[in-house]
Length: 292
Image 1 (cartoon, rainbow, N blue to C red):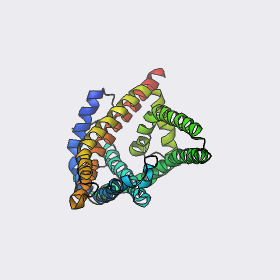
Image 2 (image 1 turned 180 degrees about the vertical axis):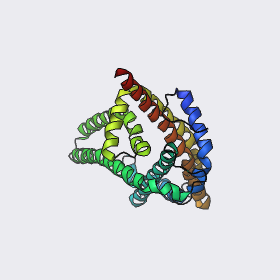
Image 3 (image 1 turned 135 degrees about the vertical axis):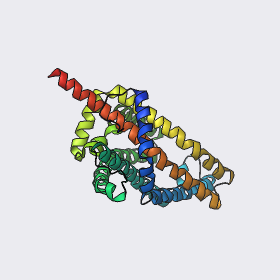
Image 4 (image 1 turned 60 degrees about the horizontal axis):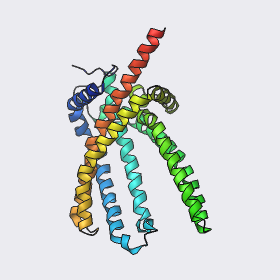
């Protein structure tokens, strides 16, 4: 029996519906994730190991007040780029399955050809959204870095510290306030093929009208994924620590396994929050209907 998305559900019902959807479409996901998802995940694991092992190998060579000097920024930049691409792909790929499923355009034996027609447009829109948010966060952070760096060079360390605390508190408050919006921002694209601007407008309206439930659901999803991810990440990290950053071949293997775990965890949280989005849409539609 086909799962109905646009239906109001309790939290436990969303968990059950997510498990049912993953069970029903998991084979399709795993069969087609090999084309782009697996290579990107392996590449991310490779750069992650290079980055972490370099930090552990060189951390003692630098003073405590400047630990960032141990970072290889070239490797770090490559890791960020690959992580960025993997996030865009996983969101868009899972979204193409969701879109075709809800529109009844997903064949019984669907393959890569059936999914890629929505995959590429989704990747374009989601890339634009992510670049927009990156600019919103990066530009103020860069200005903050320049100001505090200038103050430290002038010997005004206390003032720089006060500004750093204020900036951190403001950033933390903004993340808390806008977390529901950020958790829903992609779903008007994934379910309705909305434009970037339409997606921003609709997700703002829905998230702030349902801030409490979306915040709680989103935070729970983030915590569950984080806990599951670190169950696999900590053994890798301890292995690197005990080998003083030199993990050899096994270090690369473990890092790649950790990255491949993201291929399993990501669709779960994307589908779970998809049920949150459609539940809100249904509730708002019913509310508007009865008000009329």
